[in-house]
Image 1: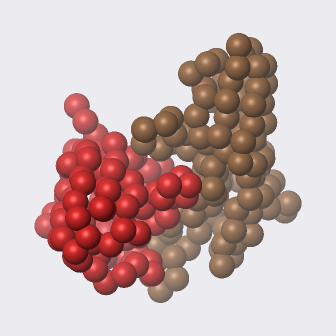
Image 2: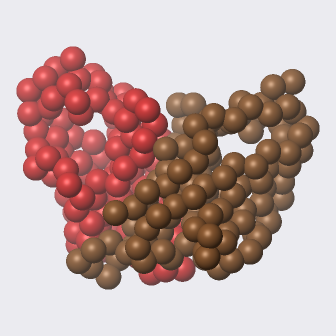
Image 3: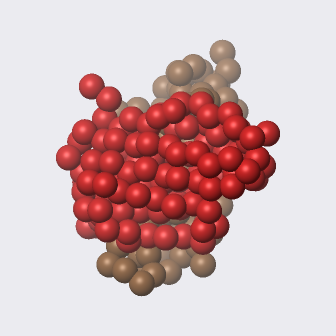
Length: 115
Length: 114
C-alpha cells in the first residue's frame, strides 16, 4: 500500500524535450508538494497545492508547470529540458497546511537525467 | 531569508551516541523538523519540535531552543542502518499566503562504523 507514488522512477531524456512526472497519494491528504534535490542533496521546495489550489510557487523557471487535477494527484510538466534540470524530484504530501500538520510524506523520487 | 547550518559529515561508532546540531536564521519560525534519507531513498520524517525542550521517539531524540535558534538530533545505540543523511528543516510562513513551508538544511551525512 504505497502512500505517495511517483512515475517514472527514472527518466533519461535529451535537452529540449518536454517531459512529465506524475504523483499520487492515497493518504487522503489535502496538501501536496514538489521538491528538487540536486547533486549535493540540497532539497528545495518548488510548488505546493492545497485542495487543487496553488499555494506555494517558489522562484522556478516557467518551463516548470505543476497541475493538480484533484487533491490526490499532482503532476509536474517540464518544457524544453536543460542540463541543469538534472536532479531527483520528490513529491510529498501532508494532511493540510495548518501548523499541526507539519509531517510530510515523500514519494520515492524521480531521477531525471538530461543529456 | 532563511538559513540553516548543520555539519556536513559526522562519523560515529556502532553502539555509540551521536548529536547532530542545527542552527537557523529565519523569520516567522514555527517549528523544527528532522528527516532521515538513506542513499537512493526518500526523506522520511523523524521528529518535530514546535516548543522548546526534548522530544523522544525510541532511540532518537530531538531538542529545540527557540531563544538560541538551535536544535539537535540525538541518536543513541547507533546501528549500521542509521548510516544516512539527516536534514533539519524549519517550518516558516510562506509569504503571500496562509501557508507554511519547510526549508531544509543541507544535510548531515552520518557514517556509522563497526
